[in-house]
Length: 115
Image 1: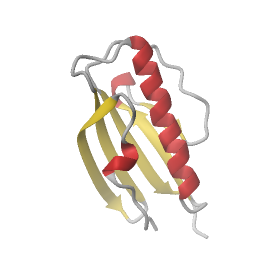
Image 2: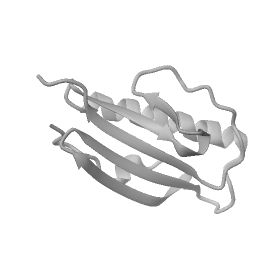
Image 3: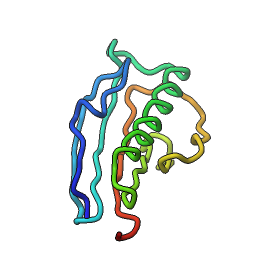
């Protein structure tokens, strides 16, 4: 059962604003948090900054995983990269960095097994 969640400030990244935040408890075993990150300067993320943001998001996922019970995992799906998904403590996703006005990420917390 999912019994822990994180607050909006836990999802914040340097160089980005959270411009959208939705949490959905899909059932007692699946919680999603959809976040829209936009650049602080209001323009767009340059390709190098996009890669840095993706790295920051995957690091957040890894950190969330370290704070959760052993049977709850975290994964993040990047909507702007054709639904590319990263699972906590996995290999950094192979992305082709591009300029983006926003980065849409969906963090998913799910029960892997019961203890």
